[in-house]
Amino acid sequence: MRRVAAIWVVLCLLLTACHQRGDEIMLEGDFQGGGSQMVRLALVGTDETVMLDSVRMKNGHFSFALKAHSDQEKERMATPMLYQIKLSENNALTTIARGGEHLHFTADAADIVSTYRVSGSEEAFLVCQLDSALASFAQKAEQWYAVYEQNIENDSVRADVEAHYVQAVEAHTDFLRDFIQKHPHNMASFMAFFQSYNRRIFLNNDENADLLREIIRNVQQQYPDNPYILFMQQKQEILELKQQQYDTH
Image (cartoon, rainbow, N blue to C red; front, top):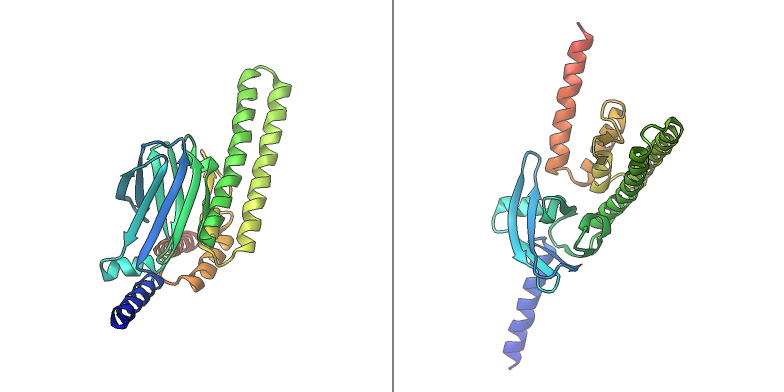
């Protein structure tokens, strides 16, 4: 009996060690009003988005277990990667996770990106903060746009709406800068730099090249082999080389 108990303890320790090494990612959630809808999980790569799995919710609950079965998959799980959880093409959220993490999401199934909350990871929590801030900006922008359209021939109202919109853009841009400053070594800051709304880019790449270089340098200290950082670093080096060649002519 003691021998069986000892074996059971060893097995538990081995399973725990496997989880701590980062061989698995758990993503689960409860979407209010989700019923039995299909949920899809995809990996967002540097050049393409790859579908990984799909499950049908049970009373709004879903669960995904990602396990590393090769050295390449283990290497990928060792660094934060972007994962997309979606109910449809226009109803999806993008989060960040790495091996050993167990994330839990709650949201309104009607609009998951604007309503979701997440626990289990600081990185994912910070990304959620970014999404919440952008959702607040988008809500205001849509309200002002409606007023703008209703008063398309009223120059005074349109000017007032445009002024409010510009102020909101500046405020959100300041929020992103402050966010990046507070979390310099976090992958969420990399995502903050590239946040946009429709065609509105808050932190223009050309005008904020120094800030992007700083983000790449800081995050790379934490995650030297992260594919997103390496990809953007290579892209920046090519742009700088082209700029140098242009300046010499």
